Image (cartoon, rainbow, N blue to C red; front, side, top):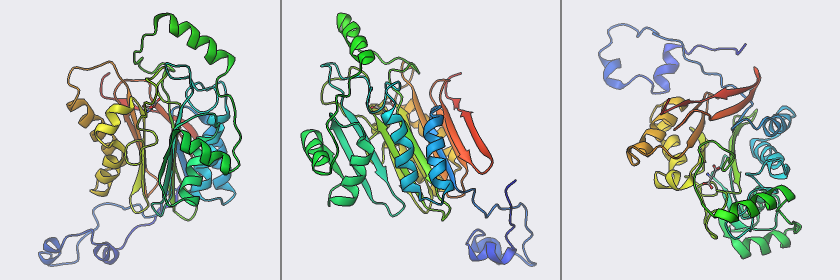
Length: 328
Ligand code: ASP
């Protein structure tokens, strides 16, 4: 059970939750109409899809009093290392030339962020992104430069293609047809958002991008504001699915801004998907999933087609939460 506290009228006015005209028209003390939950649910971690090993790892970090930034990095690293996950890190599917190219970004509660795009031969792009954030004056490093930087930081060179992804790629080459396949493991980024015991928020997002993409293609996942955005005053959001559509609406930033304007995480995610669908009338061939959390630890998600879900781990337990969708 969460402990709930109730604001007194005086603190409501202090917090500016009752507008001046309303107050000035009040002859008596305003009555509390509804209870306001002031105590945030924390710590808490959520991640896209049913990546329960990743959320478990992040929860372990948070439980031990670790901070949100370490939790999200440690959490998504689990999927980056898992070669049976063919959409993230080592074992991710390659581009159409057969090269595995990884995208990732990370953002902390102070608004610091780091990103790597089109990174090859390194299994943990999220940790390289964190190094970009912490060790350079820059935010994004790309391709060869990012790889060189990773070696300088002590990361080791690895072949990211596995027997399985090599075989699938050889099969794919026979027809060489790229198509987005809704909810099939063609694309499934892990985006993770956490609030630590101090109430600070951080997020991470990492992917091998769309399988068999054009060489050089970068999606939304490593783009701050598109695949991930954190605002420690408000909340955070992350995305999965066809990155081009998320970039066009700067999806994660949009969702955090909508929360800032008063929408719940759920309402904000729904509005984010609707904005995309307004630009894609009658187009049903792609999936997007948005996931958001606000400062209070309330969460929400929404997607284009059924099938998206997210993992949530908080003091109440660990669950896979199915998302509602634009199309039924
Ligand atoms: N958003 C990723 C991209 O466009 C793909 C995914 O979510 O699976 O690269």
